[in-house]
Amino acid sequence: MTNDFDAPEKPSADPALFFDFDGTLVDIAATPDAVFVSSELRDALMRLRDKVDGALALVSGRNLATLDAHFAPLVFDAAGLHGLEVRTGGRVLEREPPSHRLRAAVENLRVCAAQWPQAIIEDKSQSVAVHWRLAPESETQIRDRLEEEMVQLGEDFRVQWGKSVAEILPVGFHKGGAIDVLMDLAPFAGRTPIVFGDDVTDEDAFRIVNARGGYSVKIGPEKTAATFRLGNARQVRALILQWSRELPRDVVADLKLR
Figure 1 (cartoon, helix red, strand yellow):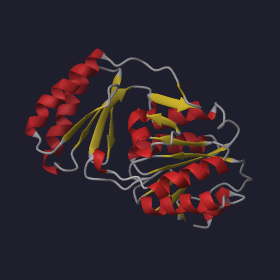
Figure 2 (tube, rainbow, N blue to C red):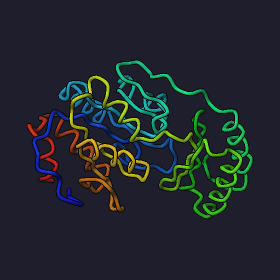
Figure 3 (cartoon, rainbow, N blue to C red):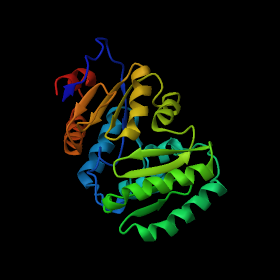
């Protein structure tokens, strides 16, 4: 692990750990349904959660139901849909109902998808994502179509661009905001937040956590606001496995040594 800049020299409180899912805990797959969560990773996350007194959460663009399916029978505190869904202590915080305008955009995109061989329309009820990892030749058409949909949806919605994916979701929701919400609740409150993520969708989380005096870990080589960097999801899983066996007295000092 390398520092993009020197992390501040200060004692660190007990950590609150936040992990993105795709590209961070699991390797990026050709389709959203093709990712693999090993039993070793499930067990390691459960042990690590116990070692940090429950202050561990998943923060993802996936919805909570999908995350739960991948980690079953375990259920973690989590923020799904870039913060549209937030759950802690088994309780899902109140959220806005799906927009009728968004439902119309989903149907329009499904019709257009006939022109984009192998592109995937992922309907998440309160948001919609278009994946073109298997249809790179359609990227320009997809981007143009999304911009047209945004004109119809208006200023209440935004496009979140990622790696071969774009997602339309309501304005005001992002992973950083979700972490802000969780950090004001037990068991996260009063701890030092540390967030791991790989995509541009995680940069909001990095900035929020850095501003809170926490630390951020970028997975991959791209430009970032993160404090530290790891090369790939395999290295994240190795770190989780190590920490689940013996949590360092100072996890930030341990991160600096990697």
